[in-house]
Image (tube, rainbow, N blue to C red; front, top):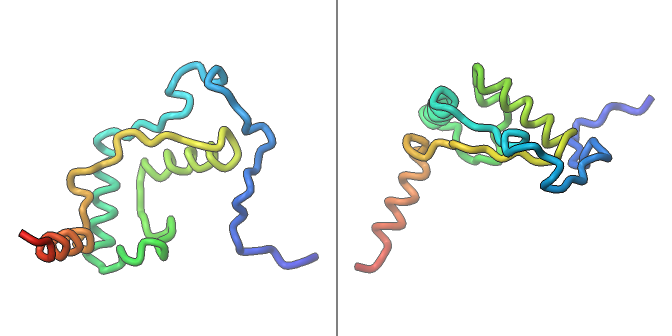
Length: 117
């Protein structure tokens, strides 16, 4: 038996991912609505990574870097919808306030200070 590949497959696992708007009863069939607690979990996770200096480079982060509680189960379900279900999920309510990291703040500060007056 050949060794199991550790490279993720980016091929959709379902053959039934062709859909039309009429395939859905309502937006709740494809929208993951983030509530206040979910947003707080995201902001706390970003702050934790930022304080530890692990927020950059972003491409090096994995799901193991994020210690979500209830939100972890919601994201796992959304992942399954993307991977083996309809092929997409709309995330509604992503946090904007409080989600800024020190790396993003320093980029904005450098950009603002290099702009001509």
